[in-house]
Length: 278
Image (cartoon, rainbow, N blue to C red; front, side):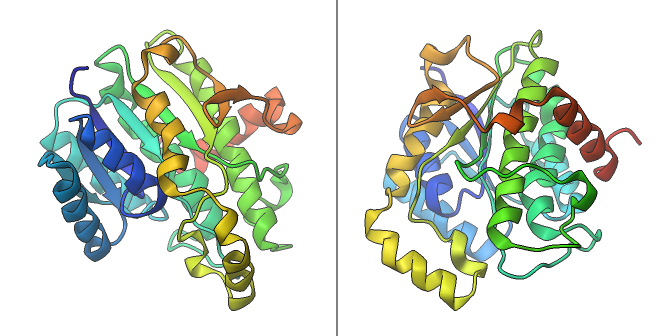
């Protein structure tokens, strides 16, 4: 297998780190896009030590900040001449509503708008190879998008807000797959399963307590990362695009995620909010 250049967001922990480690063992070049330098640099050292692969790089990228995303893309493109795989893995969940510096609800901004912008900015680089792959980490937690309250100003329920951002990942996948279908780029989304991750780091003590109760029954990050690695490198999926995967198999996502009008509306609004057409 030839060496691929692979960007993984949130590669400093959880399934992002596990996927980075597994792919590094296959001698691919890994570029970690992470928001916190200290924890990311530590993870980078650990991956290098565990895999004996020195080709592990770090770029700071905070997905809630559009300026940070643009700077990260500029840094990547000035240091690397190709991109084979983009894994949009990073995500957050918050107990209380917060806003980004740009005034957007933070979960939706980080989980959807950030990956949306990052992916679109990297599309031309991905197209150069004629065989790029994009994997969006979604979830089985999916809730219909309320376009009248996209930023959850009227009502903020943590799991609903998170689930709304995850169905947005899936709808983004379906539309993007259609847009780039003639460019040789495969776009798929996955539900990695219930994973022992630090997604609860920003949740309150009640949610953290519930998480600790079910933690023994959750998948390890390594097991959860297997579908990511499969979609990133396997020749078995070289002709599969615009699909939603669970445990390495194609599944149906929630019914609302297939609504063509809503898919296109989400794309248009996301383009406006990220100033893609400016």
